[in-house]
Length: 227
Image (cartoon, rainbow, N blue to C red):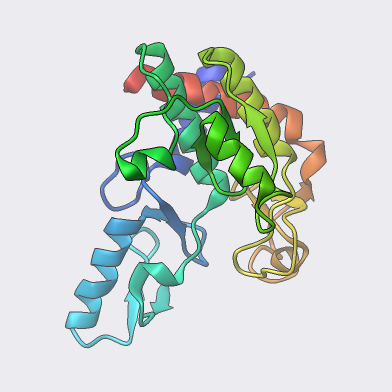
């Protein structure tokens, strides 16, 4: 039977950039499913463009990819990976006694304690920004959850919200991620199941949500120890 640490080690690889080998920052995933920091991938693409290449190899598996005109900006941020990284970072800060600050206020050099987090925008918000967010036509339908300041409680809440979100596929934007590829250990959509992952075993995502939450929780603990 696998231990929590075994599961953590397994999923730790999902959060590691294949270039700098550190926990990913602004994770960008290629069609081959490998994930890299935005800055690392952008530098890799630019280096291949300088060599007048039309394609660049994935740094991990060497699969060829067309060089996009706008570099790593061409790839959507992997919201699932980013969500887990954010949970780890917030838990580390809370355990170290730091205050989680409003991501919007800090852009104006204001330091306001965050009381809620928007799942859609991936931003922590103070009371004033939360109210403005709820009144805006473009964001009032976004899902928010309360931040209590308790590291364990907030991590569990974030994991529950993350696993229950209906997120659309970055490769097939009109398709929600309703399945889970057991070989690559990533959420996939219906179109992924019949194309890139057609030879892999996939199951409905709700059938693995509880075990997956336990594994992600183990991962959070593992990475917290390594910080």
